[in-house]
Length: 271
Image 1 (tube, helix red, strand yellow):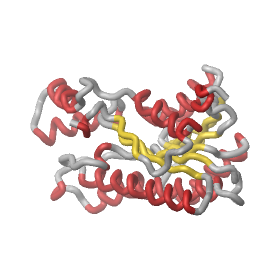
Image 2 (image 1 turned 60 degrees about the vertical axis):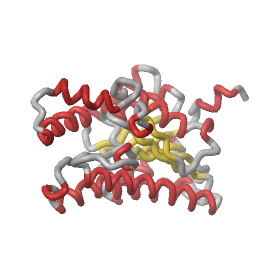
Image 3 (image 1 turned 60 degrees about the horizontal axis):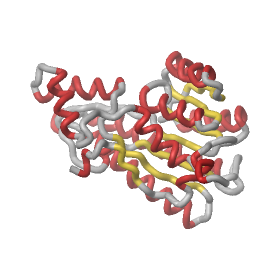
């Protein structure tokens, strides 16, 4: 088989959470372009359906499921519907997440728990039910690849991100735990994480605006340049930069990788 075929996803089925817009939408479109049938899940119905239509317009196969990633019953039904719709599940991209910023002494316990519920518990539930479906004897039973979207905030300390950093750090270690467990038990399920820097999305724009307020900087352009300067490659990331890393981890090209973290941050954490 030609080496280039290792990167193809022909005949595979992917579920991408938080795929209505931003990084999740780009992941869904890139996986579909590589040949996968893709389920787009999100609480944003309108935008989620638009992602599906964009995939279909390019000849891809996709379907939308409205899903709250914090609800276990919805995880069960989403994975069941994915299998019923496309005949299996080979890839899960745990992308759904939120960001609440603030000084540690100004962060409420309610906000901390909200971030952990979506960013950490949601990933746990996705991994739990994907492994149950992918493992031998599971409803699909042919193995698969789980890709968890973490952040550089899960690798290094950053101001005003106590809750977010805690959730993304938990995702990093949870990924490794699941990877080792599935590997040792011979379940044929791989689990890896991706750690983006600042990527040009709606979430990033909110991040920039909140940093302006927290640091007392009136100029958005000045704040953007400050973040650009953090990345040695001299630019913010694009959703495609992250989606291409996800495609690699989803494909057979990464078949000897599990428990790994791929950092896609323009060099921020290397500087």
